[in-house]
Amino acid sequence: MRSVDVIVLGAGIAGISAALHLQARGRQVLLLDRGPAGEEASRGNAGVIARDGCIPHRLSASPMVLGAQALGLRSDAHVSWWGMRHHLPWLRAFRDASASVGVSRYVRALAPVQAAAVGEHLALARAANALRFFRPTGLVKLHDARDAEAAELEAHFARIYGTGYSELSSVELARLEPHLVARGLRAVYWPDGQSVSSPGGVTKAYARLFRERGGIIDTGDALSLTGAHGVWSVRASRGAVEAGTVVVALGSWSADLLTPLGYAFPLAALRGYHLHLRAAAGASLSRPVADVARGFVLSPMERGIRLTTGVELAPRDAPARPRQMAQALAAAREIFPLGSPVDAAPWLGARPCLPDSLPVIGPAPAHPGLWFCFGHADTGFALGPATGRLLAEMIAGETPFADPDPFSARRFAAGWEMLRFA
Image (cartoon, rainbow, N blue to C red; front, side, top):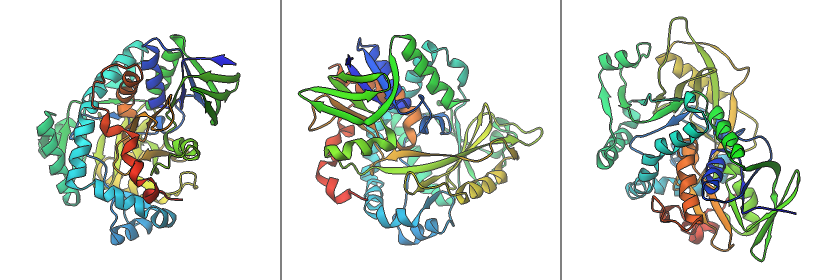
């Protein structure tokens, strides 16, 4: 049986980043996934490494709003009838965490991690020869009356934490993005973030860097993990591997492994779609643009303009539903001249989200040597390198660069049974 220092389960951006930071601290690391690195949610996002007001995504638990979302009458979020019936406890907990105290707690926890995100990405990209994917474009957010309160709250926290932003007049917006049409919308420019032209390309470049530095990447079944007497083992394609430390970074599949171990995390799969389209003749887009009220993002990518939808709360593995993308596409055409699709069909992926929108980063409460790094919701690509560093510092016994307590798994211990859903 092969032996390494650390096994990292999950070769998305979070797992790869944790593996690289552990490797930099002298650990021999095996990175294990069921398929090639970066093939799940890490490649399906808007490619934004945000530096903004850092407030969490919001979902409503109002019966009226949920009904409209279940009927497909709103494009910002869709909730399947199954999701509405089985996720009501989760939605109520999510709503409670979206109150003022919960939002303040979220921002206080995540602001230092977001502040480090661009630097951590660029450090890895420089080492991985992947700087060609990165662009110092910032991000434009468009708001209407439906999300005015959230826009004000985001600006409030940006001022507290010293994040730069500017409200754009129609003339200023036209100068920044000449082909964007935003009549009646409030435009806010967040200049300090970065965007990438291929999230999948970045993730795979980081995986190559890990391998070039002596890391081992293998395929296998994470659910084969067993542990006894301080030693963990897992079946990989090239035979069983054992280690004293295991990191669970399986995204929306983390609960499949952890529930049998007694950790019934209230983890929901927030599904999302994207589609690449050509810009209409003569039109161009220089940076990501998020229409916050309607839930979509337009982002220039290598394959064209990527349109990402709002969230869909549905069973993780349920068949794709086309209506939300159709709504997002119709809305996107109102603000930017999009041409024909490049893709034959929209991509669909699932992002893991906990009720307080914060990831779980840190040790398992009842299993020595088992560590968690999942639940990033829609911030996984942006924050993966920073949370990977935070986890590696904790495992190595270093002083973490950010307070790890808000990310502890123990915050769910009292409510695991109450929040558990089928």
